[in-house]
Length: 195
Image (cartoon, rainbow, N blue to C red; front, side):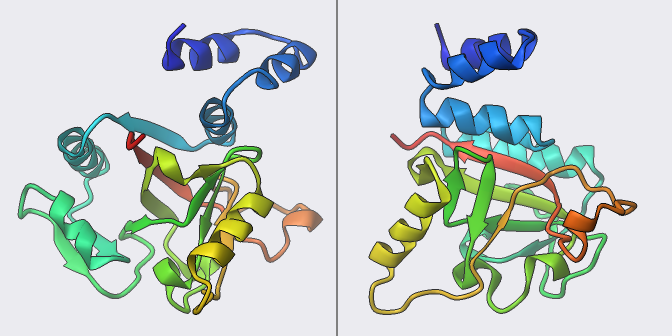
């Protein structure tokens, strides 16, 4: 059964016990996609960089975004048209385009560090995010992600390590558990196959 058929068959079935027993048999990428989409994230799988560029431009057109904040200047190579203006300041109405450290399968989260965010907190970032990641960045848990950061950056550990775990932006949440946690983002994930 293909990757997408498994994912969409899971969402069509009812019963949490049945779903949990099926999740145990899924790969980490399938579990990630299921958890990410269940939390309101918009997942777009791309087989190559040409498809990723086309998909990115489609997102911008669909949302009528003519400006974008790049958190990494190398990402400008994905824009095939010159109708998009790159801005340096963060503005609530201008989406952010970034890479990330890891994709965390067991909670559908996306982990960032100061390598992407610099010293800006996620809560201070605009609500609209577009993230570019590869399948090799998927890990099972937050522990594995933190271990990966520690191994990769032995000499210069990044700071400002934080994750987006909720993709349903709701400004009117009065839940005590969410008080002060405004890391919810309207997020598109462009996942490129690299394995």
